[in-house]
Length: 305
Ligand SMILES: Nc1ncnc2c1ncn2[C@@H]1O[C@H](COP(=O)(O)OP(=O)(O)OP(=O)(O)O)[C@@H](O)[C@H]1O
Ligand SMILES: [Mg+2]
Image 1 (cartoon, rainbow, N blue to C red):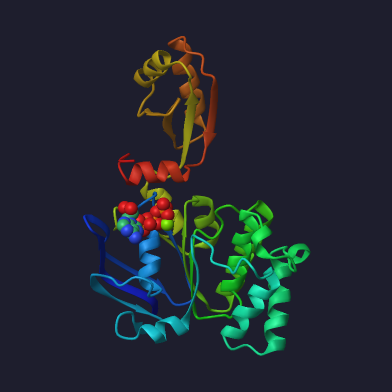
Image 2: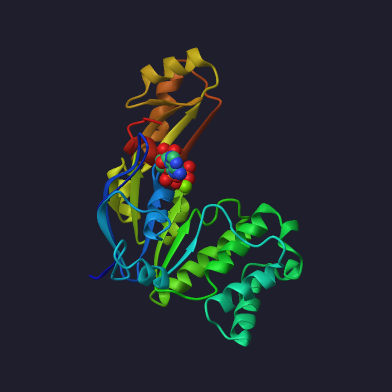
């Protein structure tokens, strides 16, 4: 396996804050890795370091075979990036922004125009393509920002929360783009808050918290590692009743206005219902569901957030 992105003990502090704490990670060439982590975990800091926007304090990293600190220009020439916060020129139209970036990245006029048209179609921006971007909604800006990062294909693509603020159609378009890019051998490192997104896109998932890698594996491995199967969620608004439910249900934990128990099989439902009935507890709602990002996080981070 060749690693397209490889970091060893990468560290970065902001004053007292240790944003990256000796983080090591490998992203195999041609694979998609999803970086998950709660707010402030260090995801954006990592992307900023790997895209040479920030200088790490310690450790080493190679991107597309080039040393991050020693060969930053070579790294920059090998990557495309979409940041968490969009950066398009407000006075230009969507189409002009795309063509501008295409020209900047050395496409011919015709190539830049063709590519822009394709991307505008893909992200459903055709109707607004020739309006100045200052009138764009948040979601439209986001889509344009993504399109800009795809104007020229580079061997390594970094996406920082690419679908935050997108409607379902645009999210699907982005997901389809990532699948297509992967099929052509592009390596993708993306951050997300959505487990479903990581599930859909990523070959492997890395979970970070407090700047450290706390889990790594395929989506399936990760779910198994974090308690696996489904959970049964019993919603009970009344705090006292909820406390009673906690005592009568095996392995129950309190979560907001609900009590959650692991549900390895469908039989858990009847066990839970029986236990509640004998304690004369009537839940407001009762559902069997797959673990969410929240479950994975709380389990991995020990409920520290
Ligand atoms: N420029 C900065 N100056 C000072 N502190 C910073 C700076 N950038 C990040 N931090 C701190 O570093 C830590 C990691 O932040 P980072 O933005 O990398 O998190 P994140 O995982 O991207 O979070 P989010 O999910 O909210 O985007 C946080 O504690 C944050 O406050
Ligand atoms: Mg971030």
